[in-house]
Length: 217
Image (cartoon, rainbow, N blue to C red; front, side):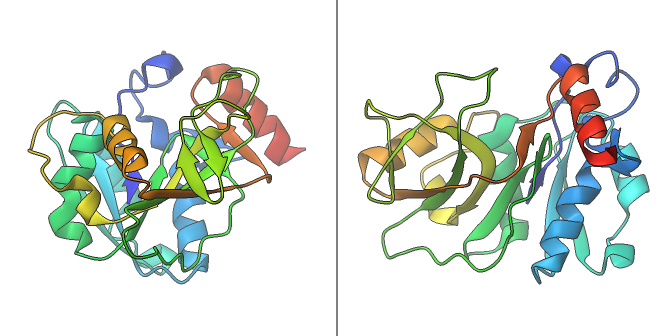
């Protein structure tokens, strides 16, 4: 699943008329980098959630045939349901097996593939070294488990493998994903790994321009 429903407030004014996933870096749509990477890994179906200017995404990307992949859409209407609510709404399209989750507003050279979840594990997060704009980080790693303990912190990359059971007990509507991660951490049911390759949070016009320079240089 690619998360593409957000308003992109930090990216304004670029997102006033164009949804953030359709902004370009080195001539390519941001969302196309994700679609092509997932397709290269042999993933055959992608769900994309929509809200702000979502019809532009549906019209531009289509059913995925030109990428060699099947794309379906989870339309949240005029207002996005936040990360947790958006995924929960899309669960009927995602099935009952673990699935990749990718934030639409990042760029990453991560290589997707099969990531098995151990019994009792509800998710596997890809973490990266803390960027300059987020020095405090989000989580720590201890023996392959994600924790909130003190020590070296890392930043959640926006890429994860999640099991639908992570959402057991959730109800529809708008809600964030972070509390579900915290609950899984308390149960020692959230795994993770460190990725040291190229990654960028493309959340502002300045970072988009930096990515464009990086990719075109």
